Image 1 (cartoon, rainbow, N blue to C red):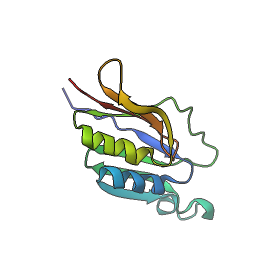
Image 2: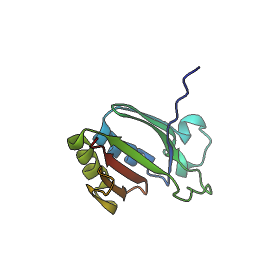
Image 3: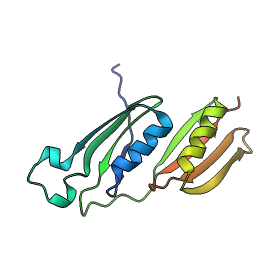
Image 4: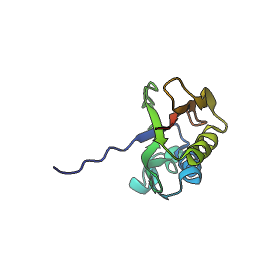
Length: 135
């Protein structure tokens, strides 16, 4: 059977570059951006420098995303990005870094199912869950 990858594609309201640079600071990896101006030199001046398609690859993540074209809705916030694993120190560091400037929904703490879990919305409006497995 062929391997199929699933990658989140995150849409932003004009701040994709800032968000991806922030995520790169947390996860590492290589950034690549293509602007609307790179694709079509005749695009409106107001969006020339906005990101049409960006990637953050390497480290522990692979993200894709861009700035939503004018008039395109950004979605209803029904998706959470989930980080999970056994490395408590690394996951706590990612929780602390990603949640900085955002809104904590569930403070990271041991939960009734035994794992350490927390959730938040980052400063770019992306919802995250962090689960530190204990068994």
